[in-house]
Length: 118
Image (tube, rainbow, N blue to C red):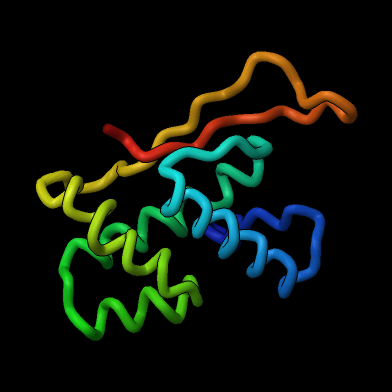
């Protein structure tokens, strides 16, 4: 059976998809909020949520695990020093999606903001 096997493919090859999700997660951690297509926002949400859960316990091993996922020292530092302390008492649901009413100019793609919960 194919239960819980859904992944967002985003119309690209696996290497490109991995790089895309990684880069969007770095931008979200750095800027706290980004505007992207709705599908890409939904694709990075579980990735970022797992990273924040990992960062809630600040150990060297967790920092190394986060670095293997993000491959960016500044983003890992921001994740552990800025983002994770805000969510120490929160059990989950660290991000939210806000859909934009109008489509993107040019191709009309549905867009959304993905941001950390205050």
